[in-house]
Length: 198
Image (cartoon, rainbow, N blue to C red; front, side):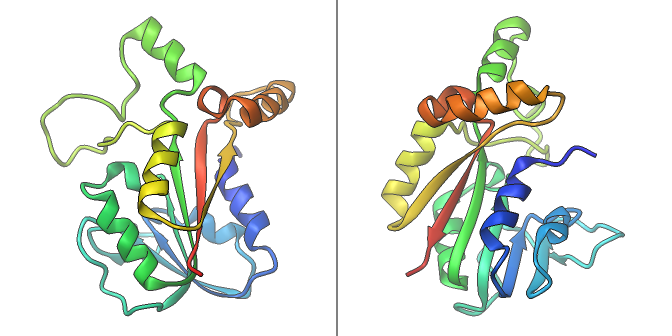
């Protein structure tokens, strides 16, 4: 089974941690499988999933949680769908005690550029239907835009590159991993931002 590298990166970061984690936009709760047993998991999503016990609410609204009620917060491939990322980030920082993890896609990834060149679109997440309920990205994110956003809206953060693994030969994966260190805007599939509360 193919697993997105962002889960593996978070697994390594949290392997020796304990406490509580709020997974925003948890959908089918894949992240839960990568967490140590000492972390108490809570999933939140906008829609019901018969196989999970997610709390249901719209992440475009203020969170219904007390200040510092979770040690860790994750929002993996969520923020690019939201109307107001600044307010969302403030809410995450209000609710966490320790760290926030946000994963954002890189639309400047070289394969996305080829896709646009050959097919004239950026894929199913960027389309113009006029339907506000479509599952689409509202924000164009790349390394420079992501870095600029967090520099303006957060104090203590780190950006890790996440490499695409699906349908890829291992040598190409490792080559991209090396190149992403020097050219993150071209060779990183997505970016994992870690924000330290203190």
